[in-house]
Image (tube, rainbow over all chains, first blue to last red; front, side):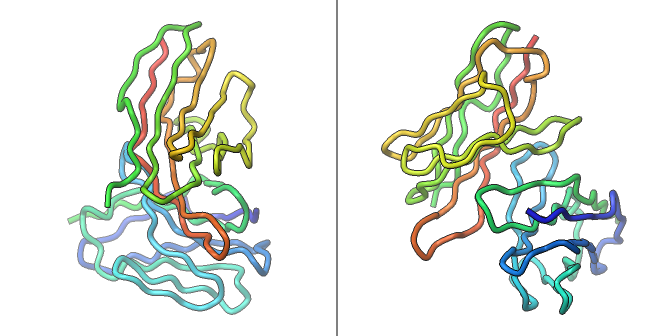
Amino acid sequence: DAKTTQPTSMDCAEGRAANLPCNHSTISGNEYVYWYRQIHSQGPQYIIHGLKNNETNEMASLIITEDRKSSTLILPHATLRDTAVYYCIAYNTDKLIFGTGTRLQVFP
Amino acid sequence: KAGVTQTPRYLIKTRGQQVTLSCSPISGHRSVSWYQQTPGQGLQFLFEYFSETQRNKGNFPGRFSGRQFSNSRSEMNVSTLELGDSALYLCASRNLGPGKNYGYTFGSGTRLTVV
């Protein structure tokens, strides 16, 4: 599985868009980019995933660069409840390999 | 639709004891994976079961074992507990099969404390 690199922490003002970057320069052609988040002491929650095209659902948008070496998760209007650790994972096999993730702090 | 259910939510055990944790997957999900989460090591994959067979295993000692029943419920067992086994143990299920490979749904975890 490809290794992903994310910033350790980020801050975002409530109501603003939160843009969380992820580098996956060694991703292979059949590996998907998955995003999960974990709110303190709960199980990780699936957010979104994509292969090549940009994706959007009710929670977030995922922008994947054309060369697939990086992606950005966008929370369009961050709320305090979005404070969590966000994990970007390159996945095509039998297990999710979690990195250290980005700790997003949304402030009032 | 019920989510992934893990029991118990909290557990305190003594060094040297053994423990069994339980996981009931989402109805229809036949794949169950287990993860260990500690402050030092983060989230680490333990193993995955599908149709009662272990199909993948992480880098953990043999003290960690698991099994899956015909109804897809899974248990994991840790024998000869060590202080370092204190962690949040997470179970995840997914709908895996021909033409299906969807994302994992995680339970809330079992917090194990070894004293």
